[in-house]
Image 1 (spheres, helix red, strand yellow):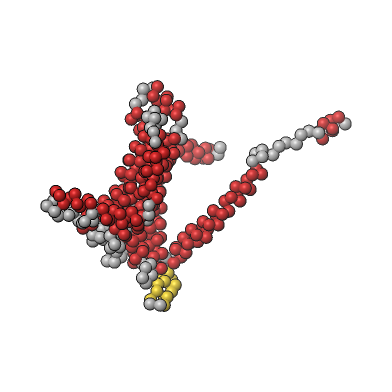
Image 2 (cartoon, helix red, strand yellow; image 1 turned 120 degrees about the vertical axis):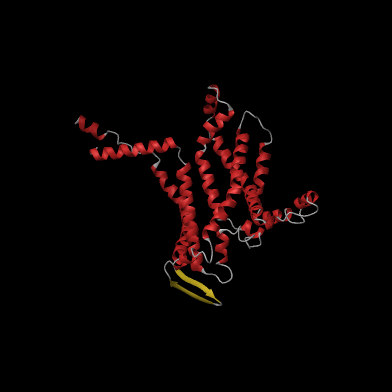
Length: 336
């Protein structure tokens, strides 16, 4: 009888996870608004883009032709070099992106390292952060018009050039690399503040004791930066590189306004999105525009994967992962 009472009074085991389980539903509830917005405004348009890419669907006057299924004809038209060189457009886009991104990432790293170094005891950091971020708040169209006026034939830059060039201005927009340089300059000035803030957040997350231990071991500032800081902020660097690359491939407003939509000189600054825009303005060809969008999506995905697997993990991590996979396969073969 005593044993029976003891069994009846034994405490019931607690559920695994403690009190965390009852809060799980709130996580799903908070995800509902984002999920709905994503499905309606991103996923569904993306599905429609893939759908229309294999259809003939355009406007002729006031009438719409299609949609009529044409298979891969739209993609064949994109890669018909007698009409347009899609690889040349990709090259133009990537070159202008690189011209702006390379100095952007270098200067952003220097600024972030400078601003987060507590040993320097810099003052007015809030003011500096605000100033470098302010260009990011200006509309790209307004920024392009500003750069156009500064570097025009009667702008202040050419006023200085005329002094040393017998009164002759340098026409920046008549030459390929000067035009590309202006586009890269604008992209650099607009986005390096945002990149600096992201890198500062990454560097501020580094444990200060790691830096102190390196200094005790005799490491100088350069060794600390290259051997400790950069490896520890690698995930944010990869994120910045991928997002910047995707934004660069979607470059449109700056070269469009700077060259008045011509992509001059000789279409050397015409980008992928400018080509896409030419097929959805005037008499839109929705099928061809959808195919161009799919091609741009594939290019973005391929380059992003290359960047991720090329920079996300160092050589040691990749070798460790390969060794772990090999060990797992060996255990499966042994029946473990």
